[in-house]
Image (cartoon, rainbow, N blue to C red; front, top):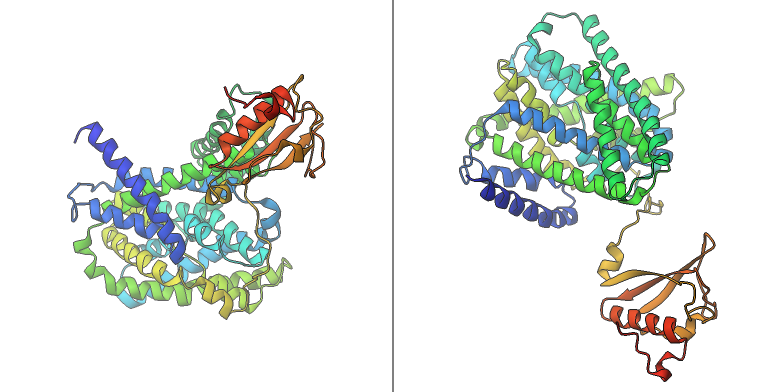
Length: 501
C-alpha cells in the first residue's frame, strides 16, 4: 500500500479508537481490549494486513511503554503517593520476585515445562500494567494511600520485570547463577535511578530559566527530557524505564511554565502510544492459534490472580511491617491482590523471548494474550464491587482536581479572557452595568497579580483581566457588548455603539 493509504487507514483507526474510549469508560473496561480488537480485525485473520515481526513489535512496544510511563510520571502527584512509595517499591521488587518464582513453580509442575521457560512466563506476567491501572483506578474512590500504592507500583515494577525477561531470554544468561542474576538486576536499577534523579532536577532547573519563544515548545521539551533520561540510562547499561519514570515524576511535580499544557500534551501522546501499541499487538496475534492456548492460559491466569499475586502482596506487606514502613490491613491486601491488572505490558514483554527465538516463546505469547483478555474482562469491571466488598471504598474521598475544559464543553460554553487596556471606557464600570446577556457571567478578575470573584458592584479597572464564561449562543453578543462598552462606556447603546468590527 502507498503512504497515502497508510495515513488514511491510520487516521481512521485512531478516530475509531478515540470514539470507543467513551464506551470503554462507561463500562469500566480498560480501553486496551477495544484497541486489541481493532488489531485483530486488521490482521491476517481479518482484513489481511500482514504483520509477523516480533523484533519490530518489541522495539515499538518498548518505545510506546516509555511514553506511557512518562505520562504516568508527569500526571502523578507526588504528595499523594509519597507515603505509599516504600510499600510500592517493595511490591515492585520483592513482590515481583515472589510472583515470578511462585508462578514458575506452579506452571512447571502443572505443564511439565523446563525451568527457564517457566521463569520467563512468570517474569512476563509479573508486571502490572501502568496504562490499565491509571485508566481504571483513577476513577475509583479509594483512600489516597491505597491508590498511591497501586499507581506507584505500576510505575516502578516495569523496570525490574523488563530486566528479568531480557536476562532470562538471553542465551548468555541461561546458566547464570541466582547471585549473578540479582547483581545485574540491582546494578541496572541503580544506574537507571541515578540517571533519572540527575536529569529530572537538571531539566526542571533549565526549563524554569529558559524563556522559550512559544508555549508549545515546553511540553515537547519535557517529553524530550524523559527520552534523554531513557536513552542515557540504556547507554550506561541501566534501566531506561526506571529512569524515564523518575524523570517524569520529578518534572511533573516541579513548578514549570505551562504545566497544564504539558500534562495535556503528555496525556495525548500516551493515548496515541497506547492506541498504536495495542493495535499492533492485535495484528501480531494469530487468532487461529489461540484455541490451543485457552486452557493453559486460563489455568496460568487463575494461579497468577489467586495464588502468585496474593502471595506477593502478603510477603511484601510482612516485610513492610517488619521494616516499620507501615501496616497494610488484610482488606487492603485483598484489594491489592485483585487490582493487579495486566494489560499490554505483558504482551509486549512476551515479544522479547519470541524475538530471541527462545523455545516455546510463541506459546508463551499466545497464553499471555489469552490471559490479558480474559482476566482484564474479569477484573476491570469488578474493581468497584471488590472495593465495596473488602471495605476499602471511600466515596467521600476528595479526588485530585484536573484543569480541563470538559465541563464547559458539556455546557457548550467558552472561557473568554478580556484585558482592559489603558484608555478603555470599561474603567470604572460596575459589573452589573456591563449588562451581559443571559448565559454569560464574569466569573473572575485578576488584578495586580491577585484573583478574586467579583460582585455585581465591583468596578472594573485598567489592566484588569476579566474571565467571562459565555455559552456558544451568546459569545458573539458578549464580545460585541464588551467592545462597545470599551469604546463608549456603559451607555454605549444610547450612542449607537454596537461593538461591531
